[in-house]
Every structure is written in structure tokens, then in C-alpha cells.
Length: 145
Length: 145
DNA sequence: AAAAAGACTATAGAAGTAGTAGACTTTATT
DNA sequence: AATAAAGTCTACTACTTCTATAGTCTTTTT
Image (cartoon, rainbow over the protein chains, first blue to last red):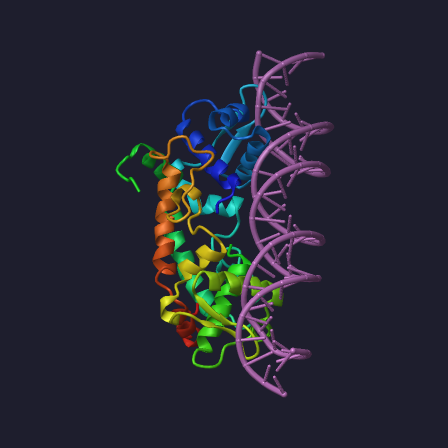
């Protein structure tokens, strides 16, 4: 399951994406608008900023805005910042590889091979879906289930 | 991330699959062989048994064996027993659907639509991979990464 | 100087995961 | 019939991670 942190992060990026062109948005406003606990959102935005996705400005008239085009921010990258690995087992992770505790022989592990397939299938979606895509889909009612 | 419970469950099913034809396997032996804490494994096997995947026999000479063909036990079903939903958000789950707390309008939610795609991609692998497939892949060294 | 914003660190509470304990039931063997 | 060998079931504890909150500091504008 996605953490709330990740959901909040995506919602914040979407909101900031829609706000592009306008003056930066303050944390408080974003929090209210998206129904996210203010101080929690603060941390999340900081993470995203430190990862280069957001630009922030202090002082009166300051706030947050996107530091990239919405079309260049992919969900896979966001998830990795907020939730860590995308793979379901550490030994199948591309960016957070770690040996599984329970695994003696990784090369012949049937479980690992299967979950590498799962990872690839998941990434095929998440690494190709950008914030712009998410925004575009919001108004597209063609997909029902 | 997969819970240890799920990993243990898969390993146990694989071991029991390989043991098919022989007398049932005792929990203690299975636990030792697969390096799974005995009492924890006990619970897991019970769950799998109550879900119809295992047959158990009490008393001397008793133990556990598969109640289905290894080819008829799919990872998706196991995961659902041990970890619950496969989707990354409750509102995108087929078997464990629940409304997301943060979501006002589900129909137009771009996040939901994307994670339905992820769910489908994941299921395409997990609902088609059986314990028999996992066993088969163990000896197949053709897949390296 | 004051006010408006974000930056950063620490901590607390809640929930979920992993593992342990123990008493009970069924079955086979002697 | 008694004993031993298994699985059954429920409760509980420890640990970790997630969610959220608090407070102090820094920067920028007016």
C-alpha cells in the first residue's frame, strides 16, 4: 500500500502543477486545499524540494512552485523519494537493492525472478506516468474501472 | 514490500510442492529446512489450510501437504491471504475495495486511474504465476536480472 | 523592526509486523 | 487405556514504521 506521505506528495505536485504560471503557493493554502495536515505536508514538500522537484521561496509572498515541467515528473521517482523501493522484495529492487534475509541462492531463486517481472510491469506504468498525465486523466472520464 | 509472512508462505508452498507424492511434512521439519520460526510458520500454514490450499493431518505420522496441484496455486491468491490487497491504493483494489480517505471524487481521480493500471500490470504477472512456475524457475538460470 | 513565509530537528502516538507462549484436540502406537 | 506425536487456536509482547505535531531557527519582504 502507498503511504499517506506518497499520496500527499502526488496530490501536492498535482496541485502545484495546476498552479503553474501563478505566484507560488503557500504551504498553509496547499494544506487546506488538499486536506493535508500542515506540518506533515511541510516535511513532504521539503523532501521534494531537496530532491529537486520543487522551488521554494521564503518570506512574504513566498511559497512553493514546481521546479520542473509537470510532464517531466514521473510517479516512479516520487514514490522512490517518499516510499523507497518500488519492487516488492529488496532483492528485486533496481534502486534500493538489498539481499533478502531468507534467501540462500539468489541466482536460482524462483521468487526473485517472479518479483523482478512484477517490478518491471509496475515500472512500465509508473516510470511513464507523469504529473501532467495524472492531471490530464482527472478530466478524462473515459476510464471507468 | 512483501511481508515476511508472505515470503514464508510462498517458500512453504514451494517446499510442499516439491514434497508432493511423499508422506506429509511436519511443521518442525519445514521450519528447519526453510529457516522459518516454527510458531510463526504454524500460523501461516493454518491460514493456508483454512483457505483450502493445504491438507493437514494430526497425530503421529501427520503433517502438511498440498491440497491442490502446484500449478493451480497462484501467487496472487496467496498474497491476498497473507498481505491483503494487491493494489497500492484501496480504491483501486479488486478484492479489498475501500474508498480512499483523501479522495473526494473517485470517478475523476487521476491517481486512482493510474494505480488501477499498476494493479492490472501486477496482476498480469501474479495471477498467472503458480507455485509450479516458481519451482520451474528455480532451476532455470536463463534469467539473470 | 516586524511580519510572513519556509527549514530543520525532535518527539509522541498509533498502527502494523514479527515472533512467542501455552493450553487444547486429534490420531497413531504400544 | 495410556502415551506420544502431531496439528489447532487464542492471546500476548516486542519491535518497527508511519503519521502527525511542536518548536525553534533562518530568510525575505515591507
